[in-house]
Image (cartoon, rainbow, N blue to C red):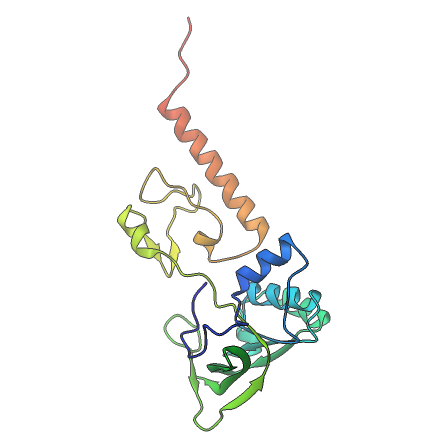
Length: 220
């Protein structure tokens, strides 16, 4: 997972979202805080927040630095999470994780505002001076997404465009004929049906390539 890059991130009680979700999926006997803060606005953040609710947290709060309409999470996941009891807070950026003897005690946030859309169409955010506030909690779950090893991909001849692997969509092929990626690393993170469709196209293309390389002998 990507790091928050703020003071206090190594405090006891800070658990990244993927670790929590993995523990929840393999064992429901996972300790959680009483008042949990999840930082992020994607599907992983919502999955982690839902897991914390089901594991017995009294309160679970998601903080996102942009607005409600800017969340990358699916609308259905967002609505279902509210039914689970998750509370959402928008336009808030974490500045520091506070701790007491090394244990999480609160998160200090600053309010944000959105600027006009940039060249990509996304609205960048900026902090609002004088809007700092402290939110007490005893567990923090960062859910900012996973970092991409772009250098490795480029080294093996795989092009990257806007953070995702560039492919020929009908076949799933990359500039390196030996590599055919599918799913999130190509589409940036969509639904299971999209992953299945990508895999099917890639499998057909690979089979056709192998047949072309090794045609059946002609008998006559």
